[in-house]
Amino acid sequence: MMVSIAIPVFNEERQLAASIATLHSYLQRECRFEHEIVIAENGSTDRTLDIALALAQKYSNVRVVHLDQKGRGRALKQVWSESAADIVSYMDVDLSTGLDAFPPLIEAVASQRFDLAIGSRLHKDAHTERGWRREYISRGYNRLVKALFGMRFPDAQCGFKAITRTAARQLLPVIEDPGWFFDTELLIVAEQCGYRICDLPVTWIDDPDSRVRVLSTAWADLKGLLRVRRNRRRGIYTDLRLKDSPKTTPLGCNRV
Image (cartoon, rainbow, N blue to C red; front, side, top):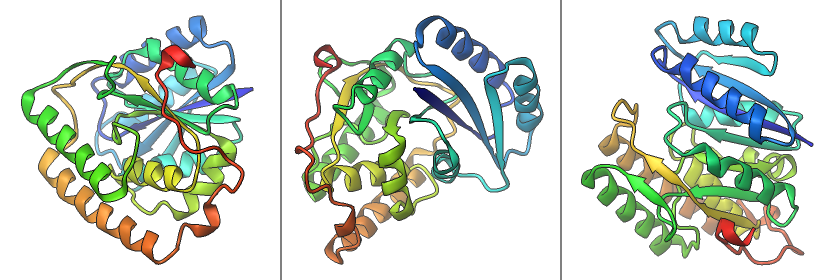
């Protein structure tokens, strides 16, 4: 089984090399599957691309995909769509999510019991360290997602996810957002179409140098939610529904 780990990056010259070194070392010790790290460099204006290319020369299982335009969703959609790996995943370059959650994330999907596995900062067993402002906005946003769509997953936007190649190729063609809303859109469509989602608690420490602009991102997310709701009413996702799949059942990693 092959696992691909995408790392979307935009102007990350300061931390890219250290993060890839940490991740590479961890995977060599802890990942029992064949794996690759894909640095998805999208529209950087600093030395990020040069550093990424140097890392690909240094590590045999690291490669680089360059996109001229920025956008996390755009980068993930291209990398995942082109991947030949059995399981595709991603995490944020700052490694805010503790890497100890990565093996359970992959095992949940590799077990064939789930189509997707997601890290959750709002799981009852999760541990997070972040400011009250971002905590309040995050919880409010996820409550809004539940209110609009009746979703069962608690955290739509944690940058720590894995999905089977089969599910990715079925779902990605209808996922439109090129930015931060990509995660939410993917999960809403997946759950409403019967894909099985495993929810795992994570340890998450806020990165003070995060590229996320909270208010502008929240506004874009709100527009994305309304678009997905319109698409659902129009039946755009009907053909993706899994007729024989059990209903989505979020589980803690202690039960995977």
